Structure formats: C-alpha cells, structure tokens
Image 1 (cartoon, rainbow, N blue to C red):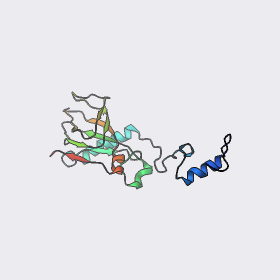
Image 2: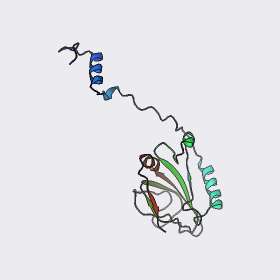
Image 3: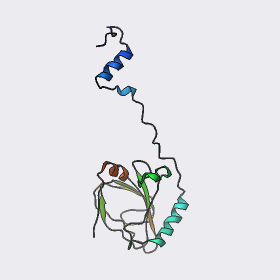
Image 4: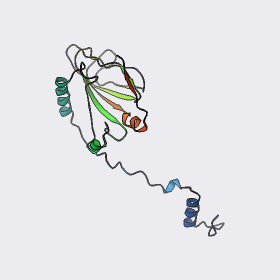
Length: 171
C-alpha cells in the first residue's frame, strides 16, 4: 500500500502509480477506441448500383467468373487493399441472370443475404436469409426471364485479418 494512503483517504495519484508499477491498468481509465480513421460514411444510390450490375452482366457471365459480384467498397478503405465496406464487414451485390447458376461453394465467413429482386421456390423478393460459415450453398436463378439481385453482408474482412478465411468450390 502506498505511504500516502490512509484508512479514510486514498490518494488517487498514488494509487495509479502503485498499479502502474505492478503492470496493472484500470479499465475505467481506458479511452474508448476512437472512430476508425480510414472508413468514411458513404451512400450508394440503388438506381446507380443496379445500372452497373446490368452492365456487369454484359461484361462477364458465370461461364468465365464464379460469381458476378460488385462489392460496396468504402472510399476510405480503398488503399488498404481490403475488399471491405467497413473495417470488419463487406456488403456486396450479386446479380444472377435468368437460368444462371453460380458454382456451389462454402466459406468460413457467415453471410446475411437480402433478396432485392427475383424469386425461387426457396426464397422470394425481399426475403432475408443467413448462411452460417462453412455451409455448402449455391446461387441459382431458375427464372427464364427475370434477373435475381441480392445483397450479401459477410464478416470476410475480419476473418481475413485473423488469418482464418477459407473458401472452396465444387467442381
């Protein structure tokens, strides 16, 4: 106990010196983590994003890429080399053209998916579903005429940062 402490009064400065010397740190003195210095607020307008997805369908097909996806990349994170919307999450838009199927695959990131447009007997427009990490799944548009568009939110950036991201596709 510090020499300056008494039964009725504890000198805060002496207390803090004592715990510091013992390699202890009071949690109540920790400053909250400041806001992420790189990520910035940003708004993606759906009509503009949808127009670019339609253009993407003319540039690539699932015959030459596994999945047609545009990530919502945070402008503040562009130079970080991460495929990320926030430091720990990515939101990405996928378009599946009529009759297309993306390869079945599984990955360690969990995915929350919201169907923006399109129907299939398992899901309908505006449905929300989750795919837990490492569960096999595929993206199929069984429609003969309408494209399917969904947005996925995953924790891929976090798992990559932790070194535990994995993904496999069926051949």
